[in-house]
Length: 160
Image (cartoon, rainbow, N blue to C red; front, side, top):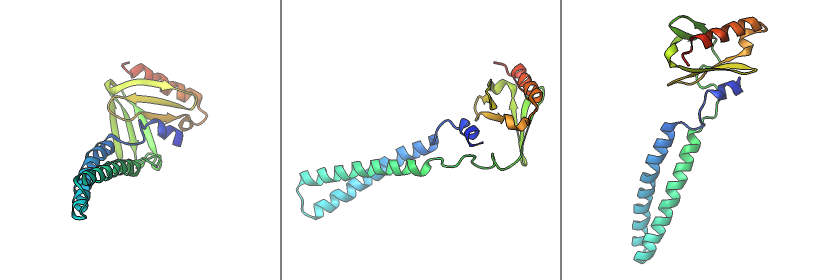
């Protein structure tokens, strides 16, 4: 299941984390530069050493913060939320794919389906604007005819 869940993730760090790391790192860097330069001025160092040390500390502070923030934002767990704990039911009707997990039901219009791909262990439905829908073969038990019928119906209804 972990391998299948990994298929729904495009990366290990989300775009919001990268954005905030990129926004906060320069602020941290600038703040450190001001603080260190003022400390060096108060210590009586020459202008050259004030700027040199302040720039050095600022660069390391910005880079360090960026790396720490990215590491904190790293997605460690497979199956965030309830995707691996609650029972999931998938049904197909003429208008959409309906996915029900716990008390939440999601409707995916057929026009949003980009592709249906099959492999030995699962069927993946690539959806425009959302994570891929992964259906493990284990959900069909040993009923290969049921899996084939489900896959055929998916491929018939998908526009692409």
